[in-house]
Image (cartoon, rainbow, N blue to C red; front, side, top):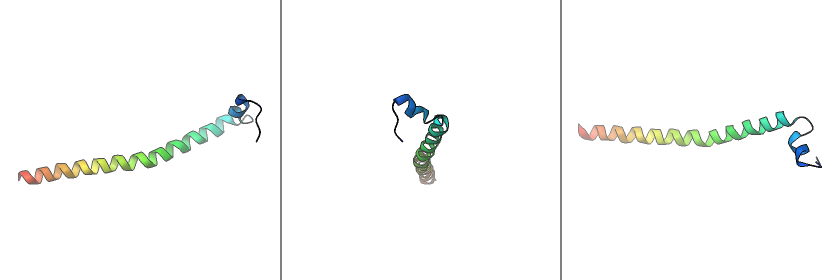
Length: 58
């Protein structure tokens, strides 16, 4: 599509709300697909370090 102005581009032929919401949701899902496994790994490593410290004290 060819837009004559930036406001027309944002409006996307009166479908801008749907288009930009879809892009936002998609971006949020992609970010969560990266961040959540990193957080889970960090939590797992912390739990394992805590467990090893407890075992060393016994």
